[in-house]
Amino acid sequence: MDRIGFDDLVKLYVNHRPVFAVGPGQIQQAFEAMKRHESGPLPKEQFLQLLARHGEKMGQEELEQCLEALRGDASIHNVLDDEIDGLDFAHNILGLGDTEDVDEEDEEDPDGMDSADPTKSMYDMSMSTVPPT
Image 1 (cartoon, rainbow, N blue to C red):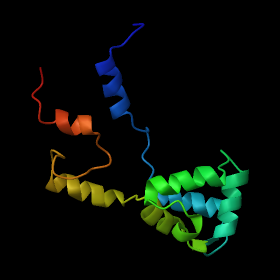
Image 2: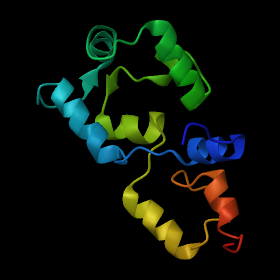
Image 3: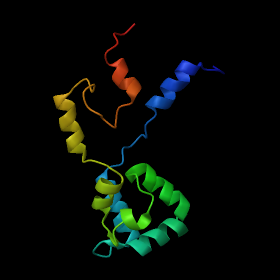
């Protein structure tokens, strides 16, 4: 197959998800690794330096764009505390919930139509009400 139609492209794009979901626990582990397993939260200045100098380097402008998208405020000083805890960052900056919370919501609303489930695309939710052809 050399070509796909626009409808199929949209379905693929809308339904793309990472193979492994990242949750607060993985974010906490990443923070522990960044701190080199020192106790306590990560100082904001150290966090910003790590973002700017290691891995996929992130400049201040890119970080501000991400914060604007995530929190509606691009100001690093308004959004980030002086010390950053991994779980707090996962919950309050990234907006990640615990996996148990998602499972409980699925039990209450099995078709996913009444709640905004971040693990389901709009296509998934709309297709759950369409009978198979």
